[in-house]
Image (tube, rainbow, N blue to C red; front, side, top):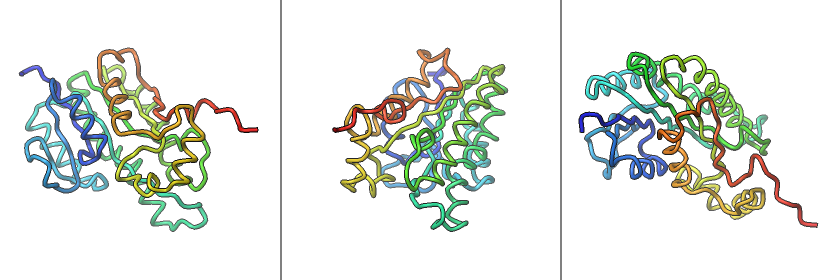
Length: 243
């Protein structure tokens, strides 16, 4: 279909990306940037670049633009989970968290935004964390990075609104992904999350993918600059204490 939108997902190897692709692929051209090839991935529509290498990301996005002529939607599924108290964190570890979770957005959007500006349309989804909204033990680095992502979302949404570009952000809590495997397999960590939220389970990749899909759709056309919490209520409601 000639009028198909082009959806670019940075971080195409993730479980959330796979669920999002299954939702969106019927009426869009899906393009992915991944760090390394996996046997299960088809080469068509897949470009390889490390999200923390500005020149490689620039080259990948230039190639995508040359191949597809446009980028209608961009989803940034790049992140990490590093849980250490600040005094035990090495400077190099801190910088890696900031580079992967925050700077990688700058590296990508510096090249995506001019394409969308030229089109005078676009839709961008970033990923934050419940840790940016409530104080969680040992989350100092990720809280700092994701808090910046939320502030960046609001500023971007205002700066680029005149170009027809919307920018929103999803803030999940603990989600059952490979990246969170060390937490998902920790009974105490899961119990703590479940106890604190209203829905009494941890998140699944499809929960996040469905929220992204909504923000990509025309149903959310009057929404920009927002942080959508996908966390079972953890960040905004409190369950009654057991007395």
